[in-house]
Structure formats: structure tokens, C-alpha cells
Image (cartoon, rainbow, N blue to C red; front, side, top):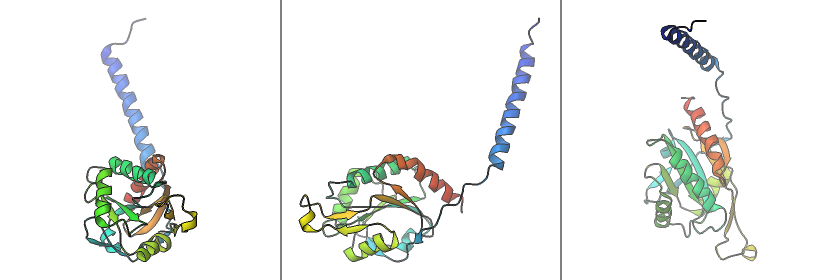
Length: 208
């Protein structure tokens, strides 16, 4: 039986490719949009100092998607894992992201802007992308607990296992949209959360 010519084979394969492309196009165009992320609350009012000594308020973060964590630099517990997750997340973001990473300290007496700046430099924090905030402890506590719904409790001296076992606090990462609304929580102790955060960021970008 004679074999079809190369020209005919190219025509057949080209037609099949066009058909597959058409099917894929119909699938993606007709696919339902991602389910909107829930809204858990809104960050309304704070004024804190960043690692360069500049004051930052909630209005400075408006218009940007933010991922927020809570650590303290002397922490020997889960904080290094959370900071490592934030560093990996920063590396996974585009070169010029419309996303801001924000780290709050739960130990402002020690974590001055200078201390936070050194801490950020060790993590490779990029200027304009990753901000570290400190200030009055009551304001940080209010922001963490009342606004972001994160735990932040001083550990009683008699329960401290080491001199720097100071604070019991959440290790969750908080996703804020461009209006300062809380749209998601993620486990900051593992980098496995990063794909979910990136997908949630894409979801928020589609809300524009």
C-alpha cells in the first residue's frame, strides 16, 4: 500500500494541531473564573517605623498586594523558618512585583530599625519589596491581634526555656489585597505554601 506523501502528512498534522489549539482555546475561554477569595477583615490604622527609619502607615500599603508575617529576630523557635519562607516567596516573585512583603516584629524593644535592617540584609531582602516594621509594642500588638487576627502574647518569665524565649505568636502569613483587606492565611513554617500564595495573588490580580 503506498505511503502518503510528506506534503499530505504535513497537511494532516497541521490540521490536527489547529483542531487541538481550537479545543484548548475554547476550554480556557469558557473555563469558569477562579472563585473569589473570602474577606476576613480590613487593616485600618497603624503607624510604624521601617528598617530605614521611615514611618509607614496603612495608607502607604494601599494599592499593593501584601504578604505579612510576624517574627522577632532573637527567636530561636519557628521564626527562622517563617523568615526563610518569606525569602523564598520573594525569590519566586517577578523582578518588579506589585507585591509587598511586610514583616512585623513582636519584640520591638530589641528589634530597632537598625537591627531589622541587618536581619533583612542577611535574608537578601530587596529594597522596595520587603519591609520590616517596628514601633510601640501596644500598636504592634493591636495590629497583630485585632487587625490581622494573629496571636501575639508575651511568655511568662517562669515558662521561658531560654532568656530569649519571649513571645508566643502566630506563624501564619497573611495576604492583604490592594484595599488592605485580609484575603487569606497560609502556614509560614513551610515553603509548601508558596504555590498557594502565588495562585492567590493571581486571583487578586484578576479582581482589578
